[in-house]
Image 1: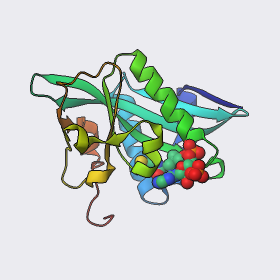
Image 2 (image 1 turned 45 degrees about the horizontal axis):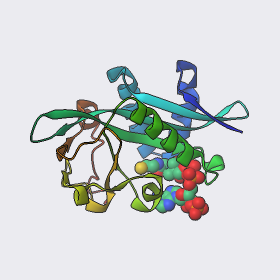
Image 3 (image 1 turned 30 degrees about the horizontal axis):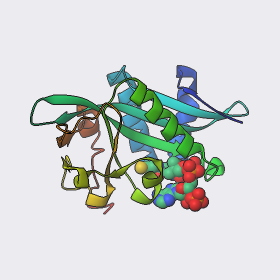
Image 4 (image 1 turned 45 degrees about the vertical axis):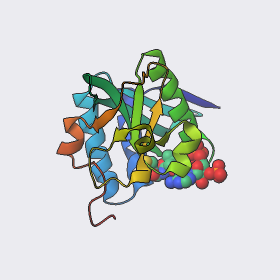
Amino acid sequence: MLIIRTEEPRDWEPVDAIHRAAFGDGHGDVVVGLLDALRADDPTAVSLVGERDGTVVGHVLFSRCRLDAPRRLVDVVTLSPLAVAPAAQRCGVGGELVRHGLRELDARGVPLVFLEGDPRYYGRLGFSPAGGHGFRKPSLRIPDRAFQVARLSAHEPWMTGTFVYSDTFWRHDCVGLRADDA
Ligand SMILES: CC(C)(COP(=O)(O)OP(=O)(O)OC[C@H]1O[C@@H](n2cnc3c(N)ncnc32)[C@H](O)[C@@H]1OP(=O)(O)O)[C@@H](O)C(=O)NCCC(=O)NCCS
């Protein structure tokens, strides 16, 4: 049975190992660097693990960013990173982590969740292309189709504008694709 629960410090080691294995050599280290910094920089982050038979098999983190709306800055959230241990993939763990996180953020009154990812995956989980809803991406290096948003119940129509990552993402150069990955 799969249990979704809040990440605790004892999970950091297995969670980091999952990201390294899922994202592969090189990029895994970048993701773990970002993750470490987000744990320290954003005490409001929602960090969830999926546990099966006492073993952590997946992890997702939602952290605070901003939307530069015409009326004012709005606190929003980004989903990053998400990973499932290679041996546990395609069993619904990733989907459950995302759905659980969105429910928790909705209960907290978060209006919008942004991410960069494959729309074929995230489209099933409540995300759709953000450009189509009037949002601007924070970097030209993010492909249009990868820039996605989930609008939660606290979203109001005036909440449009430019999505702005927290400084942590810029410091770790984790926004968009660099020429080597494109
Ligand atoms: C993406 C990831 C988290 C999905 O986790 P998961 O537990 O396997 O996901 P689920 O079981 O909920 O869903 C699996 C389905 O999503 C599909 N899927 C997984 N990654 C996908 C992708 N990038 N694009 C399209 N479909 C994808 C699988 O093919 C599978 O489809 P099926 O149900 O038709 O067989 C996992 O594959 C992973 O850790 N990948 C490496 C890290 C990564 O890319 N993270 C996301 C960065 S935005």
